[in-house]
Amino acid sequence: MKAVSSIAILITSIISTGLAAAPYCGELQLAGAGGDYTNSEYKRNLKTVEEYHFTPNVEKLISGSTGTIAADLSYTLMMFPNHHRALAAFGKLSLRDKTLKPIGARYSIECFFDRAIRFKPNDGIVRMLYGNYLLKAGQTDKATEQLEVAVNLEPENPNINYNLGLLYVQKKDYEQAKIYAKKAYDLGFPLPGLKNKLMEAGKWED
Image (cartoon, rainbow, N blue to C red; front, side, top):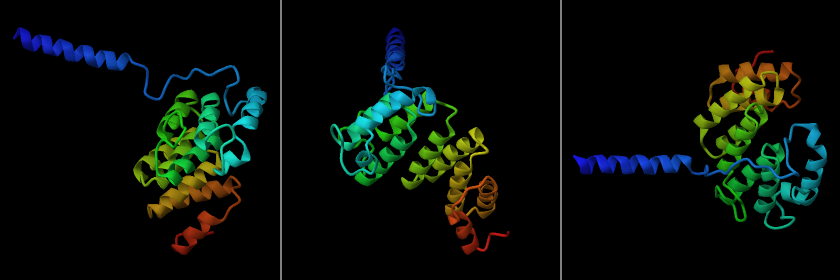
């Protein structure tokens, strides 16, 4: 009985130690040059980081600026965890290279989205970008969850409504797709792609 108790205590100790360890995706300790991508207060810092690390060639996944493409994207996201364009570019790189952690990356794509969400929980665009990435990665249910969180955070954002509409078209849930399409266009979204898809499916009425 004592042996069993000792084993139980040991297991509890191991679990507790694991829980107390630093998160796999790292702590959010920004250097002096970092900040919130959506806050104009950090515009100067953002300009400096983008000038050296988030160049047009990095964003287009053509070549790195100070190292590999993933290294420059990582640096950008370490400084600005919710950098929308860098997150989108990292997602594209991960899908293109067929790996969650491209060469030179500090963390995996999943980790960078985790960090962005922890850093700015009410940033609906981060959730939308994560949903779009998951959809392209074939994880439709998880993508739906993220995009629904996004639209709840920012219900008047036409871009988020449009992307959620596209997801529902892909799921062939045309009634839901139409709801978000109408909202997106009422809010002034300019592209007709979603409307065209619903028209092709015979599910659009003006």
